[in-house]
Image (cartoon, rainbow, N blue to C red):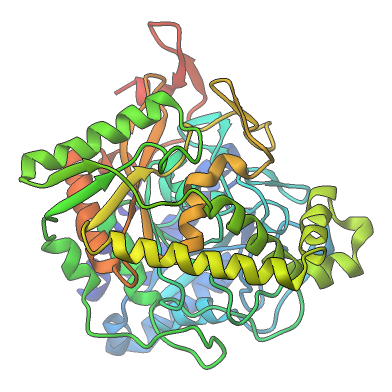
Length: 494
C-alpha cells in the first residue's frame, strides 16, 4: 500500500500545509488506490479524476493561500445523494441516470471552499433508501472485511471508500442510520451532528428535495479515526442563507476536544435502549465491555437510558411525512420507474392526517424534553451503533435476528433512528470484533450541540479499544477460521 494512502487525514493535511506533499500527489495516489481496490468493493462508481487533477493544479498555482484552508487540498469522496457540479448525480436511480448538475449542493460547496478536492461519488441505495447499499445502476457495494457481506447504507460507498483507503475522508448523510450503521459495519468513525451544524440543501428543483426545516436527515463526516472526523467536521461547519436551520460557526475547537479529551463524570449504557429493539447478544456484550472500561478512568457507569418507548411510533409518522415531502414529486412523475417499497413509503406519508402529524410532533417534544433531562445527569449515553454485525450482501434488509422478527425493512435499525428523532448528536466508533472477525461499533449520544463532548469521549473509546489502526485495509473474501466460523481473511490473518 502506498505510504500516502496509509496516512490519516490529519497527517496528510499536515504534510500539505508544510508543502511536503502536493494536492496533485495525493489525488494521483487516491486514483491509483481506487483503480486497485474498487473492482472488489464497488464503493466509488462515479469518478471525476480529471476534475480532481485540475482542481489540485489550480490550488497549487494559487500558492501560499491554499494551505491555510481546513483540508488544504485533501481528496474526499462525495455521496451520490449530493450534487457535484459537472459530475453525474444519480441517487442510484434510473430516473436520474444521466443527470449532471451545473452547481454543487451547499454542503459540497462548503467542503470545496474549505480545501477539499472531490475525487469520486460514493455508491448509495436507490434514492438513498435502505441500509444495504445496492441499486440498479451500479449494483452492490461490498464490505471490505468480508466481500460477501453488506457495508450497510445509505452512506455505504462512503464508508467503504474510507475503510479501504480510496479516500481519506468521505461526506455522508444520516436520516435513520445512514452514517452510523455503515461506520459500524466497516470499522470507521463518524458523527451525526445536531441538525443545523452542517448547512445542506440544493439550488435546484431537480431530484429529491428535503424540507428546508428537515430535522431527521443531516450531513456529516466519515473518517478512519476520531481525529479525522473532527477535522472534516470543522471543514463542514457554518451557516448558509438557503438553509434556515443552519448555525454560524462558533469558537469551539473540535480538534482540540479530540487532542485533549475530557474524562466524563457519569456515563449511561444500554444494550437496547430500554428494550425497544432486538440486539444480537454478542454485539451487546462487546459494547457492554467497552462501556465498562470507563470504570478504569474513574467514571461512574450505569446501565440506564431515557424513556424512548414511544419513539418508534413517532418516528414512523414523521418519517412518512418526510418521505412524502422529499420524494413525492419524484414518485408522482416517474411511478413506472420507481421500486414498490419507495412508492409505499411515499403513500404512507400522503395518507397521514393533520391530526396524526400534530400528535406525533407533540409526542416528539416530550421525547426531546426527556432526553434533555437525562443529559443533566449523564454526560453521554452509550449503546450499540447497529443491532447486528454485517449480514449477507444479497439480503435487501435484515428481517429476523436471533428469533426476533422485525416489523418492516427498516425496523432493524431502530437503535439508530430513534436517536435521529431526538435531534441529539451521535457518533459511531469502532469498539471490537465478533468471533467471526466482523466489526462492531459503539454509538455515543450526547446533549444538543454537544459534539465536542462526543468527540472527546469517542477518542477515549478509540484509545481503549486500540483498533483504529486496522484501516485502511485491502478487501478480502471470506475464510473459515480454525473453529469453523466464516470470517474475514484480513482479520483472521492478524
